[in-house]
Image (cartoon, rainbow, N blue to C red; front, side, top):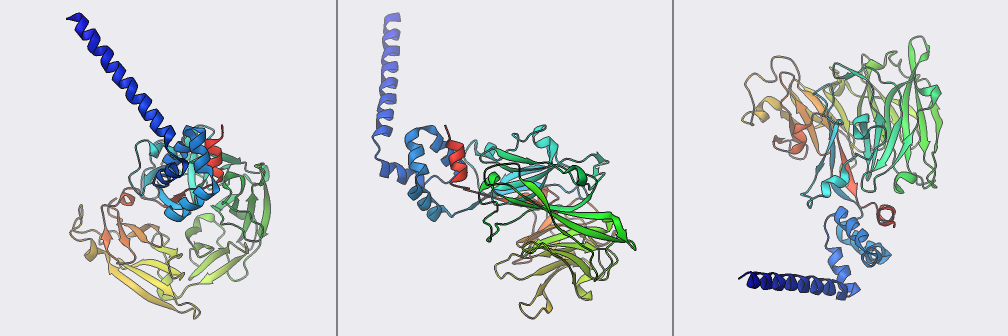
Amino acid sequence: MARGRRRRRRQRRKRASTKQLTAAATVQDVPDHVLEMILLRVDSSACLVRAAASCRRWRRVVADAAFLHSFRTLHGAHRVAGAYHTVDPAYGRPLPGGNFVFVPSTPLAAGDSCCFALDFLPYGGRDSWELLDCRRDLLLLSKKRPRFGGVATSRRFTDLVVCEPLTRRYQVIRCPANLKFFMCLGVFLLDDDAATGVGHAGGVSNFRVIAVLFDHHRWLDYRGMPMSMMFSSSGSGGDGTWQMVQWETIDDVDLPHWIEHITFVGRANGRIYWGLENEDGATLVLDESTTEFSITMFPENIWAPYDKYTFRVIGDGDDGALRVVRVINNDLKVFTQLAGAGEWVLEKTVSLPEATRGQPGHEEGLFFQHGEAMIVAASAAYVLVMPREKAWMFSVELDTMEVEREHDRNWYPGPAYQYESLPWPPALQVCTDG
């Protein structure tokens, strides 16, 4: 009886070994053109990178220029892999272990989500950094500032890092010693520079960052001065340098002396906007292409009554128009500037108390006890809104002006940064090196 069991075990081992040899032989026997057709159908960019790293033959097929061209044609040069969601301390408690989380746009294959983790960052990993911006496949983060009561105690300029999650590469950008006491209005990744070829298309070895600082030490007649610094990484992967771009007074309006009265309100169509409290419709603007500051005046029906929690500038839609999203009397209004004419018109409006009635978690009395609802974040596609009475968030789709409560973005009260994958060939070459 024991002899029969041993014989059956030997037979099972023999059959298993035969299956493995047959499978191995089958993979090796697949012609290159058939293997290429199979790999072209891989939908996850992270899976394709791992496939390229599995053996030399697969790497040779995937790294081929013709294959990459076919893959981009089939799947698009860049695809939205998901979004990094953050929590603004003004609206909610920061997330544990780093105040951001990656939410994929489509279900990823098992294990793919780890490719977008930021545990490789220096100085304590993701816990030490705050997410500031994203452009395609690059993320920009700043060294976490000290907090008191859940709110940052300072808006001072600090160290930065630019990273590429799929390849786990990063470059630390040190804050110059002479700038560490300057207040910071914002730091942003810039799009490619057509004139110089510098931009983020080359990954962490080729990108540009602009820091907008506020000098309130050299003010005249209680007038603060904005200044911008540009960082360009070298193409050879060097440390790069900071260079002064603009430092100027604004004659059109007296900028507030205190940085607390200047609030970032949007980035649209190549310009960055800051709202100025008590300045009757004046908005500070930085042109990303010329790096020049200016003042834009919005009409009274759009601006007044101004509240930094109810005003956002958006753009980058299909028509390229500039838009302002406002909450006025708890109506969400979308104003659009007519192309060429400069005239502003009310494009869409929706009553938030009426539109949210019947939504899960809705309570009677919302929007009436503590003033206007707050705009938590805004993009060309949607606006994230929260009443002042309770932490009950919802989003309004700007195409239809319909309220949406079930989307993942409604769980994170802060900006979401869209992340695009397929940064090839540079990322592919790094991931498969060796």
